[in-house]
Length: 469
Image 1 (cartoon, rainbow, N blue to C red):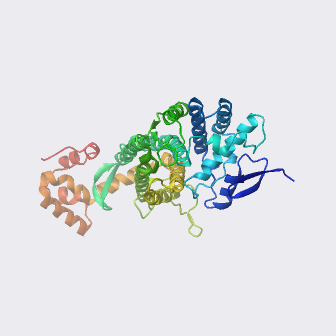
Image 2 (tube, helix red, strand yellow):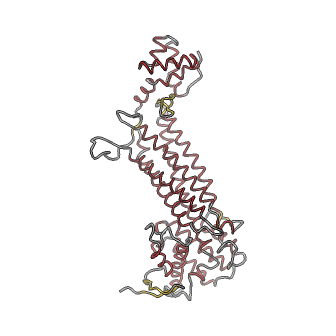
Image 3 (cartoon, rainbow, N blue to C red):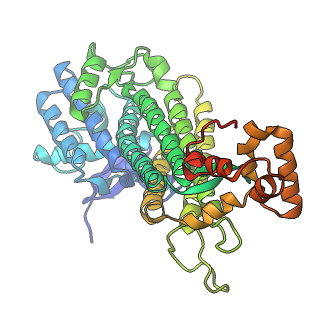
């Protein structure tokens, strides 16, 4: 039979298995919040950030005389173990929970307290020597510790995500170079427009993703302002003079990012505008990626009865009844992931709006929305690059033939023949099925074969010049 220790809070006592480093408040959270089945242990950067916050607070408290140096040393030791990821399995609180993140904060406080107790030569639960609230949480509230850790974790997580998005930009750019001489028909409203190259199309994807990389970096910078030292509502109650500035200084050094103290701690404690901005930018990225996946599915449609301009790598049989069918499963799964991210933007919007008075208690679901969106979209982008984009090939001859058989190429004759004559050619071609060349050059003799060859040379179709006569 496993040994237990008795722990108490103001609701009563509980027997806690002695091998656990978390305590009674975390235990209650596990009983109360079985919501997503995703514990915070699945977010190691969040755990690391909690360790940074507790270490920075301990060092600042020691400097301010609020903590005995020996206790501060034990807290720093425990925090370092948490930062190193050695106790991730002890972080069991569900990502979505009531209490504005109190359970997460207490999970960290209890784990670090019990690591620190063993460091000092005591047993777990002997909180009279090192207490989760009195010592590990000294000069803090959940309302500054949780959002500060969340911002640090989110900043670090966004670094990895942005690098993944940059790889997508590079992948599209590489295909743009590969397909730069592949002539194809451009389309507007799903109808033939004017010629372009497949390379130009893919290069445009690279450009639009590159724009979002810059917007994501801009939004990420909003996370550098934190409210450590605000304590409960921003008035700094129970925090010694100079503590907020010292704590943020230590945190910036420990984490290695330029964190700053919010100038108005009351505003910073309730404000979630940074999350709204970041999630909106992530939604923008998801919308663009999903649009591109729609294009990939259209461009590869067929193969016999669709556009069939490109071939996506065949990844699995596409039907349980239709032999030989291959579906664009990678763009499809990325579409669905993008829909999830777009939906989480609404979740976050509602949560941000629901913050009443001096605190937004809905930050846990904000964290859930942002963490899962970053993870899922990052995974989807990686799959899109490795299992789809890198293996795309072009049906060059088919693309060229579709251009030359299209009525849309009559647009190039506008400067020479005028809109009315060109429209007449288009109308006859549409009605009779004849080619633009047959009507304009052979039958109506409106331009010479030499002029036709000049206008419709591959080089002029790729980089069109203004030709009037």
